[in-house]
Image (cartoon, rainbow, N blue to C red; front, side):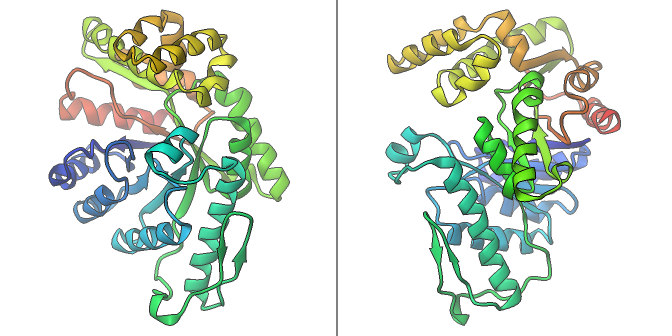
Length: 340
């Protein structure tokens, strides 16, 4: 099983050193998210200090960017990293698209499908010199003059992974993506009952082999040298679970476990700004559904016990009071790689 590390990316000056550390720990890949910072820029820095690991956006928010803008960014990072870049795309939710990004909102699943198709059409045009002609409901591309055409790359087009929570977007991944990136608010049961069947349905619709579509992610991973340190970190994870569970887009995951009523309560609290109190609604049962807890020497085995056979790659960024010693870190990463 390939193992991915999530870059902190809150201080660009430290990203290159952090990326080099992660590669030295044996990680197969590293990711950059898009919350309070851009997701692409840290990977440009990581590309300069690593030589082996895959570099992925996990995820870049698609709709505020034209597919053409994203195509250029991805192409440049693919060339800079010598073929190690992976583009991870997500839709975000209506409130953020309209009110944070001031961008129009439309049905996200069909639009994401067309977004990926647009990217592939643009890259194909650059690589082959064929005229760019791609027309759809949301995106239309028909102009690519030589001055704006970077020409063919010596590397293949980047892999495109899409994030999905609901069954429809899982199907979209099966239709057009190279892989599916799971949200942290997930569980083995949800992957088994919703994610994988959705990917299979999409792959069948598109005449693709579903086994070639990688699924990557996993729930929250809580670890430490002893039980007391783990208990201390569980309070933080309860708050994170509460934050995501308050968003109605994640209600299908909650409903699959019988936690829908809790999600509705959390949503109401979020509207009132009661963020500090929300973690108290996350029960032990809910914590266990969406996270895996264990000491350093057992966490890898516990993860594989829960997710073995369901995932192709794991996003293994620890929720821990402090970073383990390097020998212990390497041991955990290696154990996951061997078990998976």
